[in-house]
Length: 165
Image 1: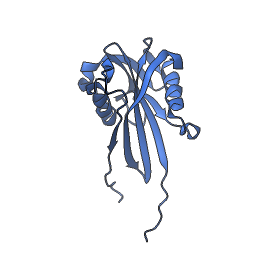
Image 2: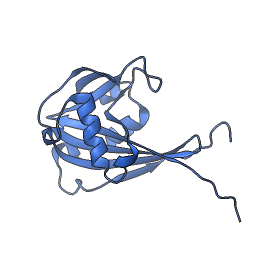
Image 3: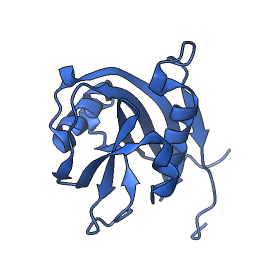
Image 4: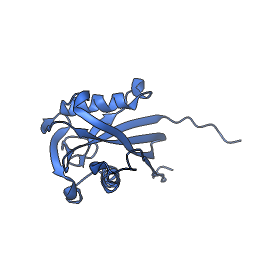
C-alpha cells in the first residue's frame, strides 16, 4: 500500500465583468511578486470560511478591487475551473463571468482597472490561464447570453512534474 500523502487546497476566484462588448480587466501592479504587469480579471484567494459558498469570495473580491456592490453585478456564472499542482498542493482557480451595471476603472490596490474591447484581448500581455479562460467564455457566446451555454462549465487540468520531482 502506498504512503498517504497530505496535500493542501488553495482556491482562487477570477471574475470577468462584461459591459456591452467590453470586459473589465486588471493590469497587475509591477510591484506584485506574481505576474507583475500582466492582465487578468479581478479576484483573489478564497478565504477558508468562503469554501462553502464561492460566490461570497467573488463578491468580496469584486467589491475590494472595483467598489461594485453585489446588486451591481448581474448574471454571475461559474464558467471555467482550472486545477493545477503547486508545491505539493492542489490549486483550484474558478473563473466567473458577470455583467456590471456600471462602469468602473482607474487605480486599485492590485493595479489598474481598464475596460478592454473583447476583440483586443490577444494584444494584451495576459496571465496565460486567464487568457485561456476568457477565450473559452467569449467563444461560448456567454457575452451575448447565447442560449444553451449559460450553465456549461469547462474543467481544465494542468498536471506536470515540477523541477524538484
